[in-house]
Length: 143
Length: 471
Image (cartoon, rainbow over all chains, first blue to last red; front, side, top):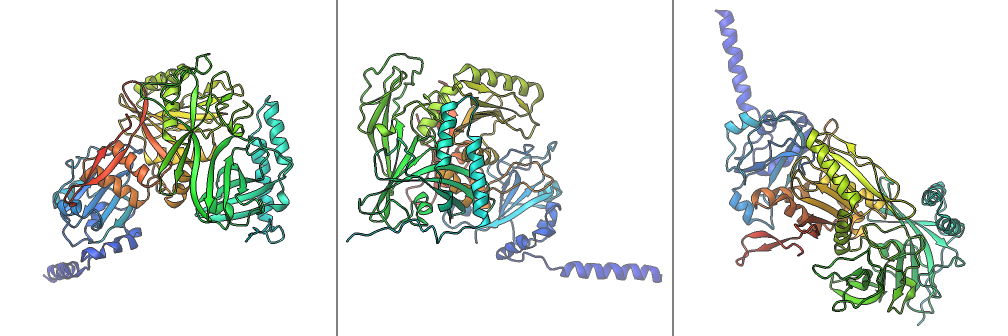
């Protein structure tokens, strides 16, 4: 009985700790923190970065299916926190974007994103692409 | 009021161990320019090096480039500006940070005011190379170490006014008939003729980027120079290092001065049997193993085209071999990708190292053939220093990449605006003044420059991109 109590207590503590874990990016302007802490993300899977981002990702494009080392831009995703329409309108004042580049997977069979990108990044995408290993990360623009 | 420009401040100039190391590098570089059995060429190099005044050498730095400047003894006579009151300087440029060699040439300095000294003040050379104001008015001519004209600059009221180079004007559907033995025939509408003679024009680009074309002279396959008042810029057929393509080697111009000339050279080489044979071999090799393969084209001492062996790369990368007298190379991409950032940076490296190197062909898998050609070597050098490549992380085999800003622009064009890879590449090459043009072979076999223009909708709320390729 005592052992069962200890297990429940440990699980309770873990839950509290997890709930209170501070994410690095609470608002869009925080994304530069990802670059400042890039050593924590380089060589690690994409899901690590995604778990640090609270604001909603509203537009993403990239080439996860790339198998060619000569590709300009390598293998990458670019994330925006504004709609595609806003990205297209703000051509003189670029909104914040995070670009993450990945290790080459010469034999990958990953599903390409639709041409022109996607409007929402969901758990489904995280499940599908979250294991891609990051080699470079940079942030541009301002929301 | 007469303003005397101060003379070479020999005593003030830095004399350090570093300069003596520079001297060794310069001497070694001159030695490397010699060619077996090219007696006249080698004698010229010996004579020039004996007239370099190393004790008056100095260095200048600007925008990431370090210039080592060695005055040349007045006793050494160039045909360029012959009889004129000029001073000559050997200039060697290296990357100020990496110390990598960029280029070497001769600068001829001619003050506009006859009363002014022909010696130049420290800092002037670097400013001239960057079109920045200097403290005097002058005419500056850049020539190769073999006395071949490259281009000239004018300064008035201490400000940069213009740069002039020699170029040919090409009519549509006409090609230089390099095999013709006919001496000059009637030229067409004042432009170059179709029987082997070429009309050359002074192309002057002003500081506001406006341009004028003025007839300079005509060259023909038999040699000689016609209809000119300035024979110092005409060929005498001796000791030219430049060249490439099918243009006669004695033509005294920077063979890469403009994309039009680069297109002509790229087209002409692509029609030669050496090229078509190498291309066929690469296609066959790639069809067999789906890998990258490369080959280099050069010229021997007699000006004949030489071809290297074909190298075998992997599915993702390849190398092109070194070859004496190299002026072009060709490699395949195992997909439809146009020239990549790695191709571009590698091409700039090669071109600044070897002033004769002018074309890089990229053969896609059953798709278009592209070529890169240098249009402005100073811009290319500047781009290399202001927008340095992002090297691939250790342990990866990606090619060098563009810096964040350019890469993001390319990605956005492709993904958000549906622009093709070749359009995006052509656009950033022009926008960021890379000094290199992207060419594509058309159905007639001619290489044409790709241009992409950015525009906004009438209401100004959207931008869009449009191809504006050369016809």
